Image (cartoon, rainbow, N blue to C red; front, side, top):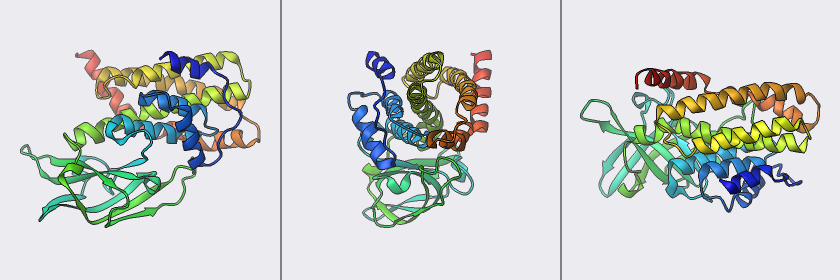
Length: 305
């Protein structure tokens, strides 16, 4: 943690990348000495000049936290969403046994950074469990595998640097050792929302620390942001499924929202970064309903531990 504190208090470098690939290389180099995903997310955010790049640093770190075998230098994407959502009953992509191995078939409606990924983490259903629920598994597959078609989608209105894609899976051949261990939904899909929030907001806080210092804004803003970044670092080390983590995360997000409103009043210029900020700040509100449901459940647990 000492190294993270030093990184947060150190003067940001003058040269910031302006293209996603260059940013990823710069972020990886800056975070090379950090082995904990949340620390890498925060340090990656320090070299971002925009919300979208910070998101990319946090998203990659979140996937490394979810699946440690990915490795920090390996680009991955998670493919879960289908037309009906991400709940087990909505997953129509199938995994079936065939002579000599397994076959994956289906369509994913939305996968973040899939077109840039080396590896795809694909959620599929292989039938029913004894209790009648869908038996969801997650396969770790090379993105260049025969039968996988990645269709880039139009850029979003905010953070357009972060691309999304549809996936078409046509009898993609897999081996049994490409299936991740455990319950695909309980161990991967469900906790990822919390893991993603912690790591993405950690990276965004790193970006805001850098922004405040580069623009010579009020020092007290920097101090509060550093404090919140260290809180995120602590949350990234906790069990993501535990209600206590969700309660603390809700407090962090509320504090971030308050600071975002303050920054809105300070970033009214027409320079490129201020313009990007006004365009991209909507990212802070994404998935608000899912967070509210998570918080309600955590408060219920707190009232009846």
